[in-house]
Length: 260
Image 1 (cartoon, rainbow, N blue to C red):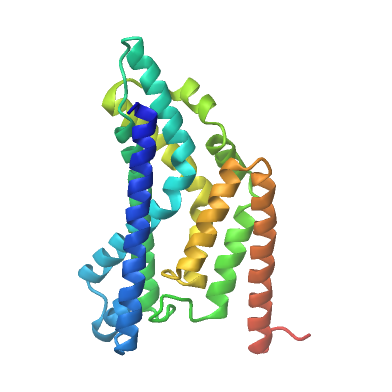
Image 2: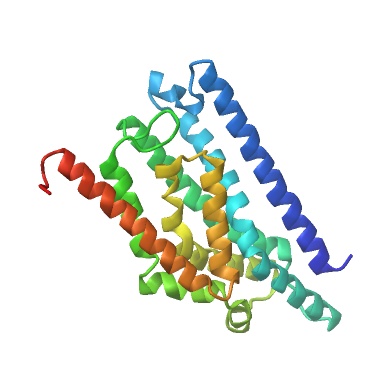
């Protein structure tokens, strides 16, 4: 089996295992909720501890692998092809696994930040036991942020990078395992800049709502690989911003801050 096929098989296995683990976690949460414990939200009964935050970090890490590896697959597979051609020429190679590991390391960092944010929101009673925003002001602000980000130049610059893997390797190639990790980190940073705002929508739709997780993962994939991906992302941004703005105005009107 050549390097590209081996890499594809590895991506399929890791992504599949991540989704299976998410399904297991969701089933565990449903069982706990039926028992009146509400899964991870048990932490609200006794105060959130470091162990609770660590469990959330693990959950976010698995979720990011499940969501982001499919959209990163074209870059990883191209890397594997370049590595195979360099090996045939007896040139120094950079292991594909190291590149993928560097990429995932960036999303591990994001997962740590997301877990800490979620812990703080739970402690402030801004998230329900089902990990959903409890206030329309928070929901509206998150949706508006995610929607506006889709139109900002920095988002579009990061997306162009993610859609142009050949240019990235032409400009950023580094030799050896260390070089592969550095390239993976570099690509991961661009990918984070492209997609982080969409991830905060999970706090509105439900952090462990797998339909929302799958919808966001699908949008990320379409943005990166479809010909009309950038415009689809912009249209989705308009919808998110409109939804968020409506929630904020409706919430303000309910408080008497806005009169129709």
